[in-house]
Length: 476
Image (cartoon, rainbow, N blue to C red; front, top):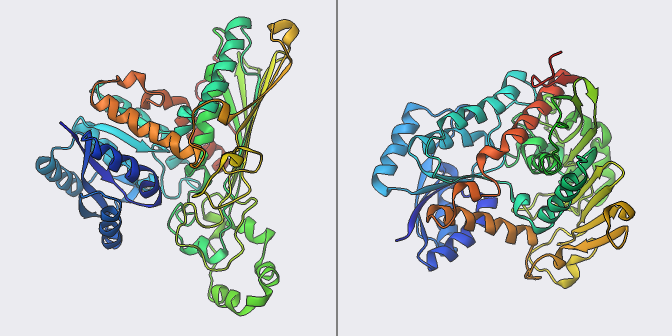
């Protein structure tokens, strides 16, 4: 008997990731997407696209609520849908400001839950310390209402399922367990290569800046989560930090405009200067200083009994190397707008081990991939460099280089990240059928407590323009 799924949101990510695997699972009679909820202005296109992709759900309009509030009207609307369709599970693929109401409703109705990252965020969160704190408060609220512990509650943080990251976590754990040496420092960087023109910063509502949140609430959560996974993998009893200091600075659109004012665009696109002038002629950028973060840079200092015991840095950026060389934005704002990913991690365990992860793309077109794309600059480039004090650890060599294609039987014609995201959905369905338990999940909701807290603290620190000390601190 197939399981009935409510899919909330059919944007670019849902269409590229969820729709294909759900269609495949429908073919095996494991699940059926019986209903899709979308914003009214997207209903027509969603009906067309779901049919084109082989899905046959009822497509129903739903309205946004302010900051994810589960209003009485929305609760009644969703309860009526549940009475009609008898959903077993829900996949929440909306903008993150709209996650909260669907999570609360799903918990009330004891549904299996798969939700995109981050768990929640808010319009204007980068300007309001109260909203920044609510990110962690939401997590605690959901935890208190997660009563049916036999139900899946998965956060789609796909790096936890990625063979390369899982291999690195094993290597960190090996050193911490053998020698009781934790992660003593780390540096993590992620960039999206999203070149948005000033008018698009104002007008675009997909992964927006104009709502007062940005990179930290977009792909940034993935990196925040992995930093916490590195720390947990190296955890040593008695050496865990009991206090964290945060120092964060944002670069907002007003800063980007200082870096590249309008005349830069006129020079770069000199042959189309009139088109550039038309784009910018009536543009009002007065609010750019309150827009969401384009780039975020954070230093985190862990402490034990008041003593600094390490340092972690996290740089999250949209404004980096891009392949865009055209004026009007592409239709696909998720993958088809010149976006190029660069990612780097440097994880240190004192004098015994340093692991570096390098993942650098040079192309923005990812629909066609080959074996060559595992190389430096390729669509699937992901190299792991392991440096070990082998005279102490007993390894044969002090250096090992591993490519992602050595860690799994991957289809070289597809993106590794998208194959990894498929495994998240498969795990979700396995839990629905009782093949796995919720605790088997690599990304069980309850294991995201530290990552959610870190995201919340990054926003709080940026709002304070200085140091924030965690409330989880040593008391003398």
